[in-house]
Image (cartoon, helix red, strand yellow):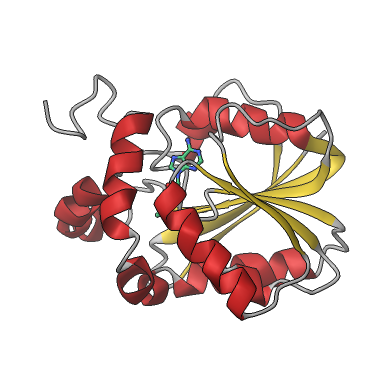
Length: 213
Ligand SMILES: C[S@@+](CC[C@H](N)C(=O)[O-])C[C@H]1O[C@@H](n2cnc3c(N)ncnc32)[C@H](O)[C@@H]1O
């Protein structure tokens, strides 16, 4: 069975860790530019919200970290120790004193108390985690009531099917499911969608803001 051949067409956590062990060394070079718009717009949005305590799930190599306002206290988690090693180097080199913690942790089992954060963000992660609904439920649990959850991700929309088809081999390599829809992520969730905006290039990604209650 290949690493993307799980029953739901997703990688399991061990396969995610193995995959990102391979990608960590060149991730910034390839995916830095490829995901730049989503990352920049997501962080710009967070910076306007008056957030004090922020959790970033699937922080990866920490490309977003230098862009947050320095008065936001950030905790970043990821299952990949190799991706986190790059993020830790970045925090040291750029002297990001507002990054309180970078921890190896599964987004589906967050080791934080309920309501610990004002906002929780996941960029380009929901298509990768083995159980995205469970991850979203955990993000909601650790977000304070009235807080914000921001998801930047590719969601199947129908209008860009030709492009999705072209990206399929690339998506498979990343362990993505290109047919993953926002409605599937939100099925059974009590979160309210505040905004859902397409992101360049070609509106292939969406920036979705959800309000916790
Ligand atoms: C495509 S990368 C995105 C990294 C970063 N957010 C960015 O925008 O560049 C996906 C990241 O999600 C992480 N990830 C996948 N499943 C996870 C899980 N269950 N819990 C935490 N992190 C996870 C991977 O290890 C990887 O670092």
